[in-house]
Amino acid sequence: MKTGKLHFLTFGDIPYDQRMLRIWSSLYDAGYEIVIFGRKLTSQDISHLSFKVKRFTPIFEKGFLAYFEYNIRAFFFLLGQKFTILCCIDLDTLPTGYFLKFFRKYRLVYDAHEYFTESPEIVNRPFLKKFWEAVAFTCIPKADHCYTVSRSIGLEMSVRYKKNFDLIRNLPNFSEDTIEELSQEHQSFYILYQGAMNVGRGLENLILAMVEVQDKELWLAGEGNLSDALKSLAFENGLQDKVKFLGNLTPEALKSVTEKAWIGINILELLGKSYYFSLANKFFDYIQCGIPQICIDFPEYKTLNDEYEIAIMIPDTKVSNIVTAINKLKYYPKLYQKLRNNCYNASSELNWNKESVKLLDIYNNLTT
Image (tube, rainbow, N blue to C red; front, side, top):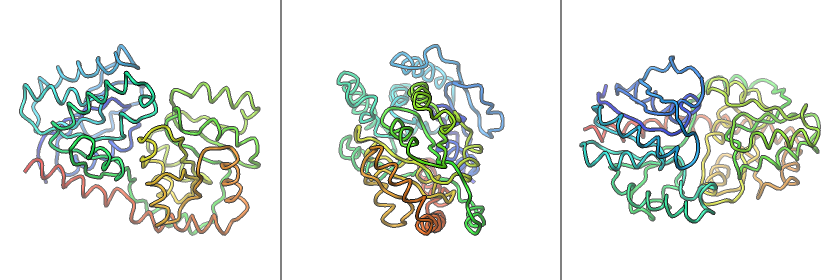
């Protein structure tokens, strides 16, 4: 068992961050002491977590002041802590790791969940993009180790910031239940989208597609900047009984909802390289739960679908393409079952049980 004290900085909502909960659990089980500093954005209970969590209620929840407040609080919190490694999750927490290096000696790890400066919220806002690019060019080279969620993002950022990025994908835990479920007839009436309800996710067209889809409901699990607008869109089109908004779900509740879904949705608009080179949690969650999916034909997803054939790929988020893909799975049951069986084959390879070995190697080497 390894020993060492690892601190993590996260700007996200801790109870709902599947990737980080898996990472923290794996490191904790390997013998590391884990301390997390984050924001209290919801009243969701976290007392069941085995590791230490320090959360504060922010004065500012969004925008530049929210990032500034977080980094100031994180900096002074860490000044009073002893640790061997600090992991900054995404670019918005990395300034703390950079400036703290002038006062403390430790190993700095950067976990990039996205290509931050190419995200839809930033890529078309020149001043904001220049600011975050300056942060990236200043801070990323000072990290002792970097890893990210997709090979394409890693290659892009390795070239841009002259820093090697390892690959730690957003893979779920392997579930033996998938084997038993696949041997049974799968009767389900709802299409599932899980994830943030933000710009560029194709959710407006997904809701409009439900006007033409018969005998199925659309369930949306998540929250985001577009939540209220999407609810209004569903109501305006008479879909209030056909489109169900579940809000944020804990990882356990989300897994239960996903397992019972008919198909999953993983579509994106081409709004920057972060989306184009993404490799989302939901893509692998659908596979692990044995449900086929409708997926955008972006490079990382296409590569994996060429290998495992677990999805119907569409070139864009047009309503007509979404409807055609849904009906293809609805009216061709043999195709549906083929993709479902392929999900099982893929799930035995694309799981956290295997991916976590690479994660532990990284931290074991850093603490040697």
